[in-house]
Image (tube, rainbow, N blue to C red; front, top):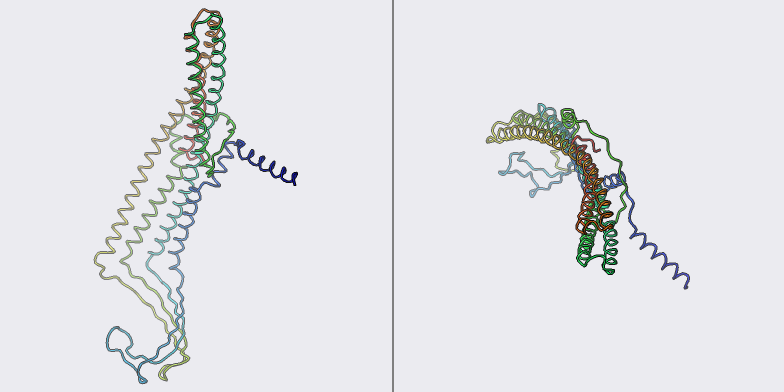
Length: 428
């Protein structure tokens, strides 16, 4: 029994350790998980599927409607009963029990159903493009969260190294002060530097956890997780030909395609509403049997006919519906033009941001190199007694700032590269 209990206890401990272990993750894995599990993507896909059903609803008018009828009537008077008021129908009511089928088929409504169907198909395509745009939006957010996590990991590493370095400096200065080789003021300065490094470390830890929370949410995981994110290679440069980039974005952005389909759907609906004043022609046939009933009724019956409905006066309803649809179609065109203008602007800004981040990355790399050299010189001067703790503290601060700036610039470049790919419709 003790062995069994020990086995189960060890299994529980191992499971708890596995749950607390950091999760290794690459950007590609994060994208695949988000695409498979994020609820916004599922909702957009389901909405697109629902839009397909709306098309089928409209197209059902092309097919005949068939329904069965069962009727049983008993009159109050053994003799035939007649209606005096209340409806325009055959006023004679006979005792009967009858069953039959009725078939109704639209012959033509002069293209109105066809245009309604075309409008519904275009709305379906718009919803499909919306689903694609939602996928791209989630991929962009995953990229942003992933690179933010990488930046936070790098800053945390810098903070940890800074704490260790300044703690060693503090210990050295305390030892020198004990031997009367350094003043208490130097100890105070070193203590302040060490405390500032600890504050930086606490903030870096908090920022890292926050970035992991954002990433976990995008992966549809409600439980707090700790990740070990793999570095991504630096992406290749995107062409500086802004005109080519704008043309690519206008041709490939799914959110713009969605608005185009919506505009075309509105135009088709306006055409359909314009035909409300046209007549509609349908055929009607019915047949059945009367197994029990008055002697005046035959055993079976059948009839067929053609019906034409012509709207004569609707109080201006149909004209108002047509005008409403036409105005909405014009508004959809204006929305399309506005979205195109916004995309042109966003591509230009994203391309400029990427160029700036590339320049910033080169500058911060050079700044880090210079700051590291300056720190080495400051340490040598401080150890030889040429300079004060203030010079060393400033050199350490400059190097820490340069390290953080270089890390942020590196991952900011990758984030802005992903943002430009999103503007171009390349995130699929």
